[in-house]
Image (cartoon, rainbow, N blue to C red; front, top):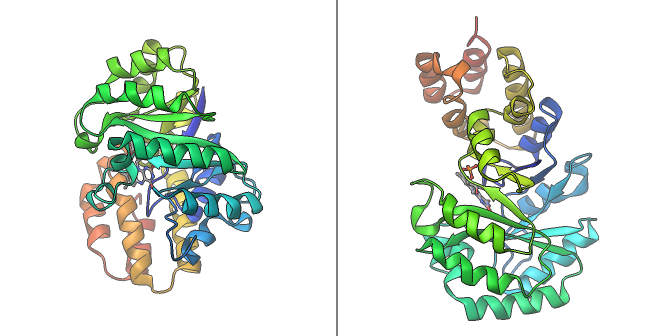
Length: 308
Ligand SMILES: Cc1cc2nc3c(=O)[nH]c(=O)nc-3n(C[C@H](O)[C@H](O)[C@H](O)COP(=O)(O)O)c2cc1C
């Protein structure tokens, strides 16, 4: 099985990726949160900063792009190709209303003729391989069969399929029966994504889909950064490892983000996931304090005293 770390906007930027790879070296690759090229500018400075090779040394990274304009996609692809990337991932799954109403992300799945024209142009002119990350559709999971027919016309490197529709957002359970049908039918290599939170979730998946060779992990990996090590039979993350991982991320943010208030916000977002990890579940009171704290020195103190 190949394990991929999912793109998570605002979270899995290069600071997080580097800390994760150095503390829990278990992932085949990391996908960047989406880059959003438009008519005015191809990549913003924050986006460039996330993908430049100096910030991703030794990591296997696939940059992801969110757009419905072929010219913008191709301009981004050329920049990424010049940086040395050999694959680019197209986001066709983002469910957020602001994205969907502009016909991007999952919203693009509702317009097959425009999507077809877009794919024809990018597959003809893109200098590097293209993979897709999609949902099953906008409203009904059965929409995926028409998508499969469309995608199969193009040399798609890999199809990462989040087994929900846009209407599900992150609720409800992934539609495994539809995923089973489409993955049997598809000639494109498929990577599964959705709700693998534990070793037992993984084992259940493997038992049901022994032929699938790649899984993408999102929230499960945020909650438990050592999930893949555990899946491979290794030991669960201990307190000391967690603190080391935490400190590496926090120091990375302090070194690169101006204003400790912004650093605190970013760290607090991570705590919404970490609080769900078994080792930390018994520390609800302490973590509540951490999430309320407004000063970075006090924050660092609270975290370093968490297990004492
Ligand atoms: C906070 C957050 C940010 C996300 N950002 C992105 C993104 O930038 N690109 C993308 O393709 N998916 C994004 N996703 C979706 C995840 O990559 C993944 O598909 C989703 O969480 C389902 O997988 P999981 O059940 O393993 O978490 C995001 C999800 C969350 C919760």
